[in-house]
Image (cartoon, rainbow, N blue to C red; front, side):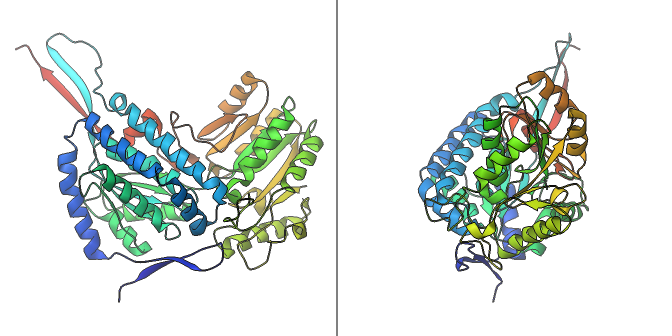
Length: 463
C-alpha cells in the first residue's frame, strides 16, 4: 500500500484531505514529461504565453468562494479573509504577466560598428517549487507564474497542510489550455521531495519555509551546480517614531502582527516605540487586540482563527510563559477569549511589555498571535535593536518624516523597508531577504533574472 498524506483541519481536528503520495516512478514520469513540454514551450512567443496564463488567472479567480472555504478548512484562516488571498494572487499574477515582455526582452549594450551585440534571457528548464501552507497561493504564485512566463516547466510540491492548492493550480491551467506537462504537481514525502530537488532534470528550486528546510534544500541540490531561491524565517520589527500618526500606526501595526493569526513570513513580530509615544501606543494597541474575535474560521464574525496545529500554539504559549516568568507583563487576559484552550490550535492573542532580547519571544520566530513592545529613546537605539536579529525580511518605520524613514531604512539589515505600512508585497518591488531570511528574489522585473540565464550574442557583421 502506498503512503498517503492526511490533512488534519485545525478547525475541528478532522481529516479534511487524504491523498496518496507520489513515489520514484511518478517523479520520473513527471520530470520526463516536463522536459519534453518545456523544450517546445521555450519557443512559444511571450505574447502567447501571456494569453494562456491570463486565462488561467481568470479560471482561478472564478472559483474564489470555493477556494476561500478550502483555505479555512485546510489551515484555519477566517473565511472572511480568504477572498483577499485570491485577490492578491490575481494582483501578483497579472503584474508578472504584464511585465514579462520587458523583463525578458533582449538587452542591447549599445551600438558598435561591425557588430551586433545583445544579451538574451533564456529559460532554465524545469523549476521545482516547494510551497508552504500559511499563504498557500500567494507564496506559490510568486514562482509559478513567472517561471512559466519565462519559458520554464514547473513541478509544484505543496505543503501537506494545503494539498488542494496544488490541485487548484492544475485545474486553472488545464482550463486555460496550458500544454500538458508544463505544470504538474506531486504530493511528496520529505524524502522524495529531496529526491525531486536533487534530480539532474531539475534546473532551479524555489523554496519557501523554515531555516532548517532551507538547509535541507541546499543539501539536496549539493551534487549539482544550480541556483536556489529561498524565503525562510522572519522576526520583522516595527519602529513607532515620536512623530507618528498614532491611530494609523496602531490600526495597521496590530493588523500586521495578528492577521492570519500571526502566521505570516513578513508579519510584525516585535515593536519598538519611542518613549514619548510608548504609553499611548501600548494602551491603544492592547485595547484593539482585546477586541479580536477568536473562534472557528468558518464563522463570518471571526477575525482570529486557530493556529495551523496544536503544537504550533503550544510553542507560542511557551514563549509567552517564559517571557512572563522572566519579567514581561502580559496585557491581554486569555480568559476573555472563550475559544482559547490548552492542547488545541485556538490561542488567545497576546501583547507583552517589559520585554527584552534575552527573551525567546523577542528573538525566535513566533509565527503566532503574540507581539512584544519595547521602549526606545532614539532612532539609533531603535536601529540597533531592529538589526539585532538572525533574520532580515522586512522592517517598518511609522513616521510622518519621509527623509527620516529613508535614513533609517538605509541602516537596516533587511530585504524590504516599509514606511507607514507592513505585511504587504508590492509585485513591482523585489521580494528578498538577508541573513537567515534567505536569498534570491521573486516578483518584480528582478524576479525574472533568477528564472532565466543570460546568453550573450556577439555577432561580427562586417568582415
